[in-house]
Length: 123
Image (tube, rainbow, N blue to C red; front, side, top):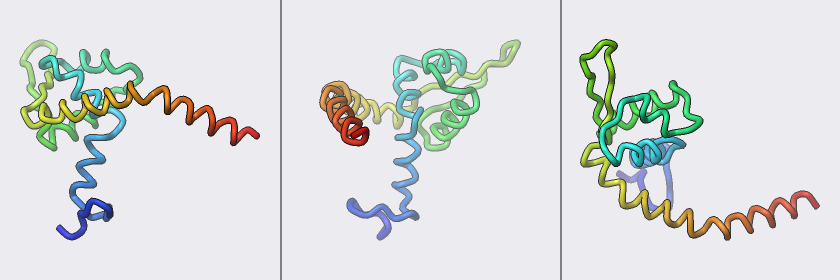
């Protein structure tokens, strides 16, 4: 897999595609929401303020295709769908938690950098 090197991100690198799919706007949050157990679609949607039905559907499909969540149809009236994180998806929880902790710890420095940048641009 020559196209995949740690310092070069070739367009044809399969790892690049997967990274893009797990680090997109909603995937990390969806996996975090599902960490506590299976949830129906609308329960996931309620916990992700601002996500559209279309964006959440696309995200869940990508996660399911990549083996990170499973989708189960509940034969009720009306039919319901439940999503659950898989063991593979659960293996992302530790790195996601580390990234979240870094985000919280680094936020003050990031805010200062943003403020400095904005002041330079405004001048």
